[in-house]
Amino acid sequence: MSATTSITDDAGAVERTRALLTSADTGRRRTDRAMTVLIYGAFTLAVIPLVSLLWTVVVNGIERFNGDFLFTSMRGVFGGMDMGGAYHAAVGTLMITLTATVISVPIGLLVAIYLVEYGRGALARATTFFVDVMTGIPSIVAGLFAFALFTIFLGPGAKLGIIAAVALSVLMIPVVVRSCEEMLKLVPNELREASYALGVPKWLTIVRVVLRTSVAGITTGVLLSIARVIGETAPILITAGVSDSINFNPFDGRMMTLPVYIFSQYRQGPVPCREDALDCLVGINFDRAWAAALLLIIIVMLLNLIGRLVTRWFSPKLR
Picture 1 (spheres, rainbow, N blue to C red):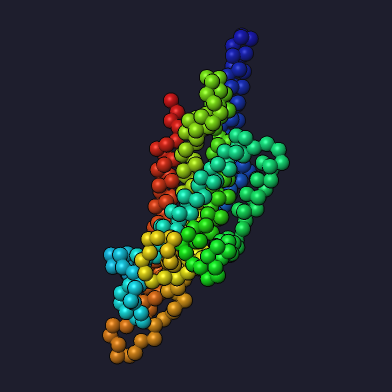
Picture 2 (picture 1 turned 180 degrees about the vertical axis):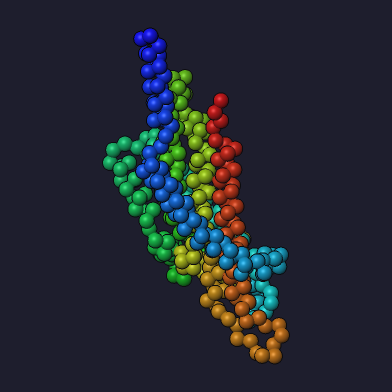
């Protein structure tokens, strides 16, 4: 009889414990629901401005976003003529950004390698401090620095694509350093020690093991730094100026970029057309500005998409 009673008591204890574990406290349930509502509300508040921005740009820029706009320049276009495009601005944006990338990526990557693999003592601390300071430099200051630097060699008033590329590289280098540094720190020390145990020199370990393991994160960081500077206007306006012609050479003459093109078209404002003028469009400058903004957003989206694909393709595979 006592054994049966004991088994019954044990079964009752198990049932009570199960009920206690599976049932939720009313207060906790209300708190969980409230936090869920707050999280979804914060997400909605963050998405609404983004969606509104994209919708506004698409609606206002899609009408003029066509082949003529993408493959013609503003050479010989004036007034309210229903022609002209942003081909020269797109070329200038790509050339200046590519030149800035060629300058900043090797420097930023080497500085990150030094800080992670070799940096010790006062020099490493000073380098980290100045990288942090450079991260907060306003873009206009970078443009003034590049302008002043090249004025020493080329004289006052010089405006070239290479000067704009140097200004953008000043903004890119700290971003590249920080992103690459964090990616290199994520590489396990066991991989380095295994390479050293096999007699591989340190420089070869960095090239073959460390960089190979973190190549996906480094590439993503570089692409994000490009997306960060591709929309800069102030330093380009100071260093590269404004041009209506197509220029593929950053070392020869002024170059136009998409942000400066948007600014210049918006600044011109409505075109004063005569009432009897049939080929004059009052809002043509605004239409070109919206279409160029749409093109710039598409380029930035493509860069972010490429970064995601690189992360997926080149990240180390877990077996």
